[in-house]
Image 1: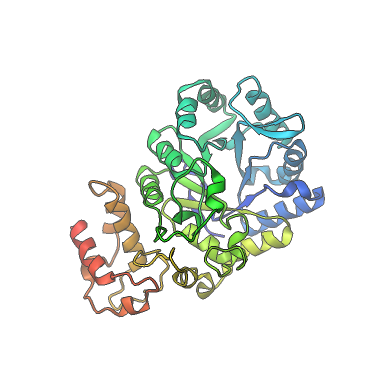
Image 2: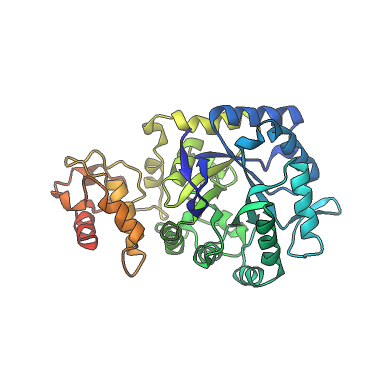
Length: 380
C-alpha cells in the first residue's frame, strides 16, 4: 500500500480507502472480514456517512480490534429519523446523531469530522456563519474530531470550502465522467446526458478547484470513483466502453490534491479487487485509451497526466510537468508551492528539445513541445 499526506491535516492516508456505504446489506461477519482484509493490506481510512444504526454498529464492531490503525471520516449532519436517513442542519437533532455515531463506532473521537453533504452554495455560507459550524468547532475543541472536513458533489461549493481556510480537507466526487460536467446543486444531473457536443474536456470549474486545493494544501478524498458502477459497464458508461476499477482509481489518483479513493464496495471480493490496484501493472491502469476513444466528450487536446508520452529522450516527466503547469496557469502568478515542486525536478520543461517523440504517443493530441516551451517561460 502507498500513502499520501491528506492536505493540511498532515495525516498519512492509504491511497485506497474503505467506502462503507453498502455494508447495511451484509452480515456482521462479512463486514469484519472486509475490515480485516483492508487492515492487512495496509488500508487505514474509512468513511461512515450512513445514519442507519445497524450500519454504524456493524462497522464499529468490525474496526474495534484495530481502532488505533483506522482514520475515520465521521459525518456531522447525517441523522436517522422515523426509520430513515435525513440530512439536516437542525441543531435540535444533529448533536444526538453525532454522539450516536461515536457510541456505535465504539470510539470517543473521529479523526475527520465531516460537514455532511453540502451541495448548495447558499447552504454552505449559512452553515459556516451559523450554529452548525459553531457546533463543529465545539467538537474540535473537545477532541471529538481532530480535523474539519466537508463532503460535496458540487465544485462551486468545494471551491468555497477550499478558499475558506477553516476546512482542512474535502470529500469530493471524482471520475472521468463527472469531470466533464458543469457544476450543479443537483447530484442527479451528473448521471445525465453526456452526448452534448459542448462537453469537450474537463470542466474548467473542476480544473480550477483542483488547482485551488493543491495551492491551499486542502486534501481530497474521493467518492463516486466508479460513478455508481456506471463506468464499469459498457452499457451504462458514457464512453461506450467499460473502465476497470483500477483504471477509475488511477484516474482519481492522478488528479491534483487527491490523497485517497474511498472505494464503495459491496462485498469482500470487491474490496480485494479495489486493493489489487496497488499491484496492478502500469499498462492495465491505462484509462487514457478509453477516454481517447470517446466521441463528442473526448478530452482531446488536454493532458490527463496519463503518462502515455513517456519515455522522454531527455528524461522529462512530462505528465508531472504538465500537471504543475496547469496548476500554475489557474492563478495570476505561480503559487509558491507549485513553483518549488517544479524547481525540485532534476529535468524540467526547459530541457525539451522539441523532438516530437512524445506527441506521437499522446492519445489526446496534446501539442507537448509547444506546451513545454510555454511552461519553461512560465516558470523561468
